[in-house]
Amino acid sequence: MSQTVRNEEGAPDASLDIPALMSEIRERIKADVERNRDARQSLSPLAGTFIDERGIKYGDLQHAENLRFLNINYPFEAKLTPATVVTHRQGPLGKIIVAVKRKIISFLREGILAEYLSSERVFVEHLVRHLNETGRYIDARDERNKRDLEKLIQRVDDEKSHAIFALQRQLGDMAGSFEQRLKVVDAMVRGLEGIVNNFPAYTAMGPNRASEGAPSHEPRADVSYLLLENRYRGSEGEIAERQRIYPEIFRNASGPIVEIGSGRGELQRLFGAAGLESYGVDLDVAMVNVANSQGCKTLHGDGIAHLRSLPDNSLGGLVAIQVVEHLSREQLHELCCLAKSKVKAGGRIAFETINPQSLLALSSNYFRDPTHVWPMHPDTLGYMGTLAGLRIVETKMLSPVSPNHLLKDIPIDSSHTPAVADAVRRINENFQQLNRLLYGFQDYCLVLEA
Image (cartoon, rainbow, N blue to C red; front, side, top):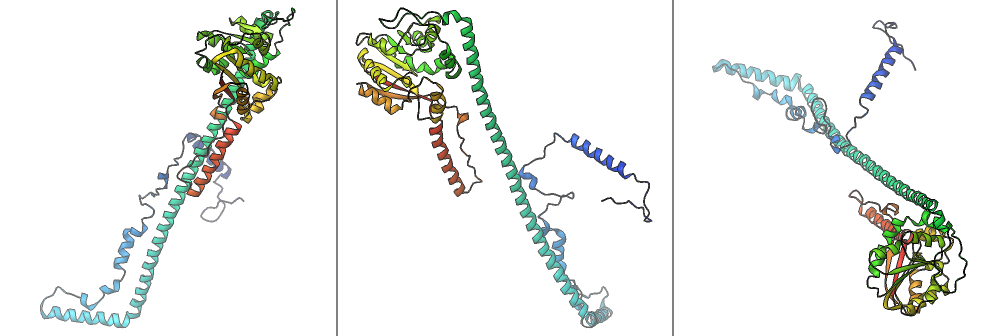
């Protein structure tokens, strides 16, 4: 709704250009906003200290000097009494003057001014009492407003901190996801580069057979499983880093160590660097070619068939990484029995596989590979080993999930009541239990002894 500006005589003031004035105000506001764009208001609780332009703190009204003066001096009629009459004159004249004044004051107080003074006294008493009550009310209100504002400021500060924390966590999750995808892309690129650069070597006729009586014709390599490994299992450097535990497990091997399903040869290179005698056996021609092209000794063939062809007590150790989940129950039983008979007494056998106790590992790692037969629970794998006469040494849990992917605990601070804090603790315990179920260790290694 518009309003006409008028001059002192009530007539419209034609000298004011309202649109121009409003435009100027808008421009000033824009300039002020731009000038203070980077300025941030403090959210400190100190902002709750209220001081006006005169330097008076709100909340000090009850102690104001003016109110103190009223409380002391409000019965002013007490000063208008005969006892307060004095004179500077000496002698009988002074006494006469004092006596006359006292008579006049008494006459005024008890006669003419009696009703007025009584009413004035009641009015001043009510006024002073009202001022005292108003002061207490205003001071109490200011104190309450101060506390409420401080709580509001603290709440805003907490919400800001929580928002920053949530944003940091979200950025961490995004960074972790991006890093994982980048690793997949990197593995794909490196795998494809390796295949392109070594295509004749990867697809050539297979190397030496792992067992006697093999057919004379050799299959040409199928690189599809090699590409699957490169894309989803991890780079050769990552796999080698995960497998660094095995040279220590087999450090006391008294004979050659056979790796069933040796793949690209990461573990074989680790054994070689540790001075351990070993060789690998793998069914995939492309995998065998990759491993041998990098200086590994790898045979092409079925690992179980190769073990059958070996003399008893001829091996210092046996290792199969991500193999047992590819076997049927009968094949696994035969593998354990062959391990018992072919590995020297006291030699170590290590079976690593996907941990089905972690739903993430089961849903992602296990079901991603179409060649898997059945997930192997640690208890089941241990039972199969002991059934063949092997002794369980230990079960190593491997490949923990990144903390960025876990369910995060809810922080508990001093603002929480005991009941709320207890509820948060119970929720956090449930989060931890869910983390163990959903995001447990991705793999495990069962170490056995012949």
